[in-house]
Length: 388
Ligand SMILES: Cc1cc2nc3c(=O)[nH]c(=O)nc-3n(C[C@H](O)[C@H](O)[C@H](O)COP(=O)(O)O)c2cc1C
Image (cartoon, rainbow, N blue to C red; front, side):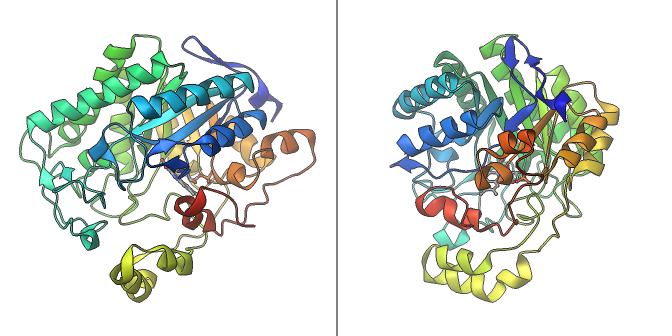
């Protein structure tokens, strides 16, 4: 465990240890602008001893948001994010931000037809009237690629130490990678080489715009978690290609938000809270009737992605971030022994921002998080927090 507390370098950035707070949607905005709570939240995470904290879900454009009230990268949010970066630095930490585009996972009624690699049924937002996506044109792709690159460039300029490109969990770049949603017949669909083409172009565009040294993380699925989705073999190919196109480190995760949302988290499905939180009567009723059938539950196990992640470790020579079910010293030791460079934490730090300090000092042996997953319900009510 002591090994994990040694300094690490990623490009020019010195991280005080191997621990990263992964992106967990905070819901701390006022009309889409990050608020003081978001600043305090990440400052408290930095004080709790992780080397790098990741602000979640920075949509690269207004139509890249799933919901209207979410943050996107514009002058007003950059002003607040710049304060956030300063305060995290003063608290002794480094800061990154997850850059994303939701693709067709949209409930944002400002958008008439959400974008996706192909025309698909929007199982996520059809109740908001956004029933089908529109297949992206070359113009759409060029525009979104530039939105990613410009966002990363601006964040670097205001003091962010790194960015994370979201290529997982079923969001736009993951929709390109997945054969489930990418049905294109051109050079962007079909084989994994073709499905990976647009996500890799986006990465290369960001690298070109931010320079050789700037740390760029990519969050990538090990698999979508269902047959006919992105597979572990696909993930091996993409991991190797990411290195060639300028990725600094890969954060390994899994799952597809509209089909296998709990594959990436494991534990309880907080169905009654999800029904209560549903958008409107129709969604609440549908969730109550079909939720138990369509939302699959996956049993929690410590280090639940480790076996799959080890297969990626065997085939690539690039810094890898292990994520998923880290909750004890023993678990951390297993990850380091398997050759991972960094360790990311989600729920243990939602439960207690001082988890690491307490683990290190011996005050606790394990995280107190029960994986009730009620934090998922709370995140869009009044900001993310543990309900225990
Ligand atoms: C409340 C909550 C919100 C999340 N929001 C995001 C998000 O915005 N982006 C993302 O990539 N993953 C998100 N995740 C998934 C986490 O990044 C992580 O993959 C998952 O919690 C497993 O890690 P853990 O076992 O350390 O919690 C979220 C998870 C939780 C519990």
